Length: 134
Image (cartoon, rainbow, N blue to C red):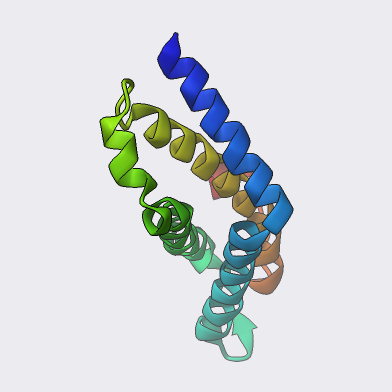
C-alpha cells in the first residue's frame, strides 16, 4: 500500500509541475512536429509526399520524441539529488520509477494524438482505417 501511495503522490507532484511549467510537454510536441516536417520534406518524390512512408515516419518520430521525454523527465530529480535519496527510502526507487513511467505514457499519448493527424496531413496520405496506422 505504501508503494501505491508514494507513487500516486509523486505522480501528482510531477503532473502539477508539468502543467505549471509546460516545459516537457511543449518540448516534446515541438520536437515531434519538427520531426514530422523534416521527414515529410525528406520523403518528397517528384513534388509529392510518399504516403507509403507514413508508418515509418510515425514510429521513428515517436521513438525519438519518447527518448527525449525520458531524458527530460528525470532531469529535475537528477539535478536535485533526488535519485540518490530515492534509493534510501523505505519503498526504494520503485515509486519514482512508476510515477515517471505513467507520466511518460501520458506524454506519449498526447504526442500520438497530435502527431497522427499532422503526419497524415504532411504526407498527404489516405488512411484506410485507424488500424492501418497502428
